Length: 153
Image 1: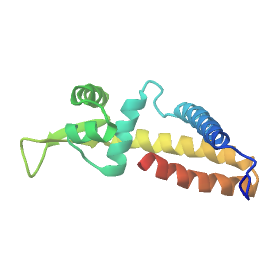
Image 2 (image 1 turned 135 degrees about the horizontal axis):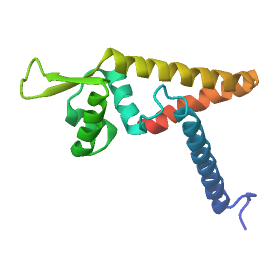
Image 3 (image 1 turned 30 degrees about the horizontal axis):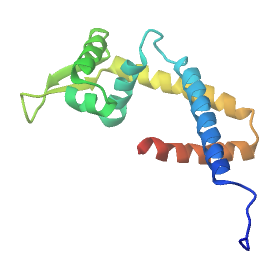
């Protein structure tokens, strides 16, 4: 018999990880669903808004760069970009250094959609956080940092 004993089995440790993963997945899904309702344009899809947000954060991209960033096929991204262009949210222009390439950029209207959506979402989160204790807000701030590392993988 060993000199040390433990109260938990290896399977208990895995069950704890599984439960935590499940709780995080469900909470993240529900939070994302609530935030999606705060869009400035109700008819815009998640994929369309993701493209606008990527252009807002990272600047102009080619179609291929956008497809890679959003992890979709080039034909799928082309459909998304066409829809956004028809709506007046983006423009296409020849690349200044390589005329064979086309740069996709936000219009002022596209930028306004991203700005307003961010404002609405931040207001919703701020309102939700107002009902929490300072310790709970600090815990969520730490969790947000960890979640940022997870999604960067």
